[in-house]
Each structure stands twice: as C-alpha cells, then as structure tokens.
Length: 440
Image 1 (cartoon, helix red, strand yellow):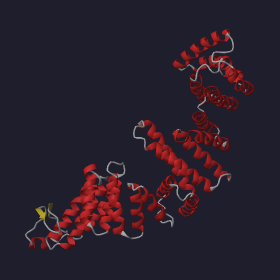
Image 2 (cartoon, helix red, strand yellow; image 1 turned 45 degrees about the horizontal axis):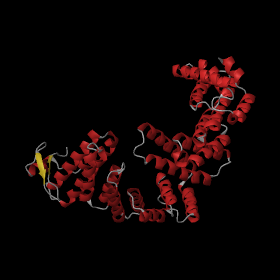
Image 3 (cartoon, helix red, strand yellow; image 1 turned 120 degrees about the horizontal axis):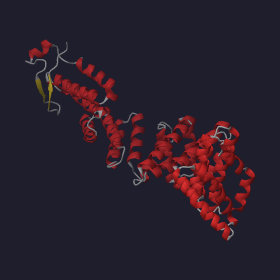
Image 4 (tube, helix red, strand yellow; image 1 turned 90 degrees about the horizontal axis):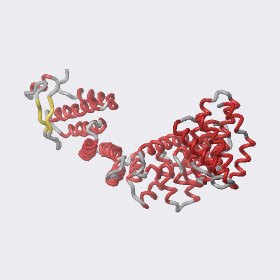
C-alpha cells in the first residue's frame, strides 16, 4: 500500500486536480466516466464500511480523477483514511506527502461542495496537529474559518485558532493587545455555544475543553494591570457596545481582576443595562474587596434572586452567606447555607457557615447556653468534616476553636451537666439539641 500511496499522490497531481475540479460534471465528463465513477464509488463505500482503507484507496484515487464532485462522503471518509495512513507511516518523507494529500482532500472538498468555513476549520486543526511549527499558515486558515462561520464555528476550530495566535505571540509576530481582543471575541463565541441548553452533552464537553484551553493561554499571557489597560482602551473605542462590555467583564472576572480602576464602572454599566446574577455577583465581589460588606451583601442577595435556575446558584448562595457572616448578619448567613443544603446536603462549606453563625451567637447567651452554642457549632463542623473531605482541615481548626471554649468538668457539674448528656440550646434565636462536652 505504501508504494501505491507514494506513487499515486504527488504535488503535481494535486495541482491538476484542484484546477480541474470545477470543470467536471458530477459523474465525470463522458458516459464511460460515469460507469467507472459509479463502480468505483460503490467499491470505495464498501471498503470504507469495512475499515479497509488500503483497499479503498485505489477507488478513492480513481474517483478524484474521474468525478471529484460525485460525493461529499468521498472527502469526509478521505480525511479518516489519510489520518490512518499518516498514523501508521514510519518514513518521514512519505508521512509528509500523506499530510499534503490530507490537506488536498480538504481543498477538493471545498472546491466541489463548499462549506468553506467549516472545512477550513477541520483543515487548520489537522495541520496544527501534524505541523505545529507552521503557526502562521494555521493562523490564517483558522482565522478565515472563524470569520466565515462566526458563532457557528466548531469548538476545535476556536481553540486551535487561539493556540495558533499564541504561537505567533511567542514568535513576536502577534501582540498582547491582539491576544486580548481575540480572546474577547472567542470567549463570546464559546459562551454563546455553551448557553445552548439543547446541545448534546458530548458537544458541550468539547466547548468546555475549548474554554479551558483558551482561558489557560490567555491568563498566562496577560496580568491584571495589562488587561485593565487594554480593556479601558477598547471601551474608549466602543463606549456604547454593550455586548463588548459584557464580554470584557467576563475577561476581568475570569482572572479576578476586580481591583482594576475600570472594573466598577464597567460592572455597573453592564448591570444597569441588563441585571443578571453574574453582573450582580461581580459588583458584590468588588465591594467585598473594598471592605463594604453591607453593600456587597445587597448585590449578593440580588445575584441569588436572579439565579433561580442557573448552574452557579450554589456558588452565589455560598458567597452571599459568607458576606452576610462578615457583615454580622448571622441569621441571614444561616438562611443562605440552608438553601445550599437543600440542593447539596453534603456541602461542607455550607455546614461550616452554619457552624460559624451558631458560634457567633454564643456571645449573646448566658452560661450554660453559651456553652451549648459552641457544642452545637462543634456538631456542624464535625458533620462537615465527615461529609466533605475538601473542608476537613478547615473544619478541624474550627472544632479545636470550639473545644477551647468548652467548660471544665467541674464547671459543667456545677450546672448539673455531664459529658454525653443531651442539651437543648435555646438562646439567641437558637432552638436545637446537642450534646454536653467538657474540656479535658
């Protein structure tokens, strides 16, 4: 088969095919061609069904020569065939010729069946895989693909394009500003795709992977100060472009750049135009960093209210609870934590939040109820540690803090309390049962 492949496909042959592709009819130029075309198409399809690429190749070659417009499947399966040949080829020179043939397969598909943006995307991704050093060529192919298909581009195309741009950036032929402006555009395409609730789960995984790749590249390239400067410049150029503002806010949030001077005005503009859970959360986060817990709590509550069925509801509830706790509103913090537990009964952070709220209420209780509050808080921390390994260390530290406030055995005995005895806490709004514990 190697002799057949290397002998049949050459660059000169490729040039003739591309130039002559549109001059041929679908089934060839003559009745004899049509007979040969149908015969070879049948053979080709049968061999491809069997996975016998070696046997399918001669028919593929004849179909390309006689009737290159006979079937789009000729090129769809042709890509699989050449990828298989390339993977198995050991000779470097032959492998390079096979890669050329794969690229030609894509060109012929475009010449005969269009779909230029989609096919260029596939071509660029394969070229990047086989010849990663050719980043300028890959960049140009993939850039055209995205310009043609926009939000209809494939996840792999978007991801590969940003990788190619990053390659150019590494070579000094692309700027940091290009990296940011293209990131903003690409992340918009990715988020639009992920907002499609009817998307197949397998496709969603591709888009999530694309977002992960694009984010990882971008966050290595730019620091917050640089991002803030470029964001400010983009806003000056397009002060009324709300879609741009939404995407830029995502950029700043993605790398936690809420300290940047441009952040608050941008977040307020986005929130004012179209209040969403994300924009409310963004403003809440900003005010947390400024130390304005009451102002932050107002936005965190709004984020929760606007996120009735969104995927980030638990995140917003947890942050709202933590901010409420920091603001001294412990009953509100506990309310948010209980809402989390309705969704995720093993959420350790929510249980710790309740423990914190209970412990904070101990200050308003008299002995022995103040001890009871610490015993009850200890219960919540212990439950968090047993149910959620991710908070084990934090829960253990809080348990130790509570233990330091337990009474001695003699102090407990004075109130007719002994270790292990049930105790009902009834102060500071608390009304729960716990267990007596003493400090050893």
